Length: 530
Image (cartoon, rainbow, N blue to C red):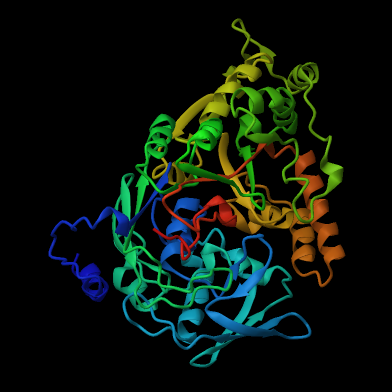
């Protein structure tokens, strides 16, 4: 704890708190904003995770060069007050604010930007979202508040991608001071909230950054936030989350079970907001290097043996749209040619399995070479993947496949997935555009995560490169569309539903608005008013 105390002392002193292992005092209820999430993060190092809960905390405690508007498309100045782009699209010159400080009191400069992206791109960081920063050729601090950000090739989506939590600016001193404990025992950022404590799977406590006054333009309040503290509690059980919000125990959540949204709407003390600019796909992915799912006929059979409409109606209670495509038809750069490639056909599913050599056993479950068709399926507890997975189990048993669901706590699931000992996994993945999702999951450079399929295809990589380097929207859409069609025909995923994102808040809190970034819902909270 000595190293942690070194950089937290000035932060805690500013808030009038004592370290020395003493319990934190509980402020008046009106001074604490209370959020609820259904899963926790394994850590809060935003460069080393794809998990929304970790990104959520990073967005609260740190800042990016630019910020995403409520529409999910418009980019605003943030730590960078302005920028120029070279005619060839390769060099961005960012002009930084000169009035920004970290929670620790350190002044923010161009050196912090250079260090942030050097660490993000360093092989030892193993940043799963490192690609969001583009192919960086060089980073140069031209002076204390100017950065030359040079790309190896044009990247038309760079500014939008720089709004994502992966690209939050970090403090080199604290990263090096905490070492492997960075993001676990502490962080330091230039966000509106400062890290105080984390009790895994229970609660994270943040405090107001009194110096913060550089909020992006889409907020009415540039800072500081209007609450002294922020409590983020973890509640995995759906019934508990419903009861807690309905009874007024919490002020805001983006984790309210969709099945109970009608009850929330009917509650006179709650506000419900649908985030229309958000895209989230609930899917099950196949690790195609595992023998049981290596044959594309087996994957296709599973994809066409389930009834998505029944799942959306009976399990998700209508709070989603059926998805037979990997990206939403409403998303930017969607390829309409992928519609219709996946159609329910139970008899064809059985025929494909027969052709692949999987024959029904005595109990109806198919076998081949003495091995039963029982793929191991990893899912994270607390979300829709468990309930939907159970429904899929029933549909697949009709064709002789027995899914073996293994449910993991959110703090353990990333570690278990990294062990690679499964055939199928499931997440609900948020994304900005069709190209964003294709770049994230299907680039061979992202093996083993988030390209957990282990899809290594030269043609896919070529089209992704052409799309990302495109100088016109037409060329970009064409190449991203080709990728969508190729991976859909390979049946690398089982798309199930496009999940609707709702935020639920207590009416005692004013000026509440949910944000679409990565389905996190809560973004900065600058306008939230007690």
